Image (cartoon, rainbow, N blue to C red):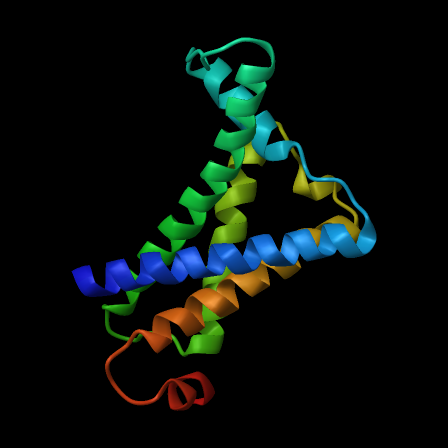
Amino acid sequence: MIRELLAGAAAGAAGTTALNAATYLDMAVRGRPTSSTPEDTVEKIAADVHAAIPGEGETRENRVSGLGPLMGVATGVGVGAVYGALTALPGRPKPMLGALIAGGAAMLGSNAPMAALGISDPRQWDANSWLSDALPHLAYGLVTAWAFEAMQPDDSLWSRITR
């Protein structure tokens, strides 16, 4: 199971790169700004647990700006690791189903804390907001599942993806 967990974590890192690329492509094509929700989440968590983020002014803001995306990386790698560990159990999902599961889990893992903290309310999102969130998470799921499959020692990647 350790091998699957590590392969899943590496696949999750690859998926996170795909998610970030899809997000930045969307920003470049549509000219939309970056979201402040990761930084808002860092601020809210820090306030709720009474943890001070060191520094003042721009130094502190830069730390918060770094911590927000790091939470996203941790979510992506963590979901990938869990995905890998679950594949060690009987009934491993086919890669396309696995992609949907991984993408959905990553979307839930990033949006549920923000909703619980009152940072964002997905129930209030319009269709455009949902697409801006769902499509990069789909890219995450596809790359995570396919990268995980590519690391498996058995038959060819293509046969596993198309089965």
